[in-house]
Figure 1 (cartoon, rainbow, N blue to C red):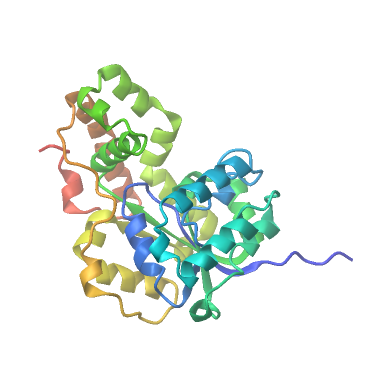
Figure 2: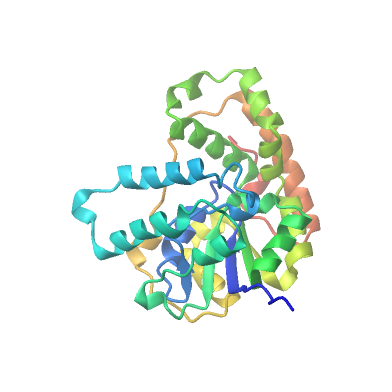
Length: 295
């Protein structure tokens, strides 16, 4: 008789959307003693369980090298040393599978030894299909997920700007032509991540209404502590004392610049559709969502 595979007890997922405040949430929730994160914020395992793209050894090695390049020698404290050891083993182990994923959460600092939740933030999980969510269920006994949305047009523009800035092509943003903008909107990934309503329906269907919670970037920014308290309640965790001055900080802001008219035209159709469909799903979007970007 074969043994039942070991499972994680409780897995907390944040599934995006990209450029909707997930890095801010990660930075603050990582300080909660009831939530244990691995040193790598975005693991992406369930989006690539065979290790062929995001989870390939080359991809993981590149992320490790980026961490090392950004490491200041005077910050090589015991916490950083523990993180570096985690990258060496288990993160960079050759074989990627469910046992590998579970093992990513074994190396805990003392203050997180009894944390009831392990956490994995990846916007790629927003577009998992039924088999993807079934896989999540095979790895963890209990799964809860949050999904953060932002004004559809503003998020699309912020995401496009970030991709250019991250790849060192920021100067090209000022001369985007209609063909480039059309290619961005027609990209299957852009379309999938812009369809908030479909993600909401998917999370409710695969996890259940009481295991998925939805947030809006604009409300997170306006009421940061209230947002963190709501997440604590969602996870049945006690309140944590966060640094008040850090709650107001913006993380990874992109530079301000004018939005091309061709972009506004395509984004407006998405904004109007998502506002209507989310309303049909019972979600009250922020007032600002009813105003087209640029007005």
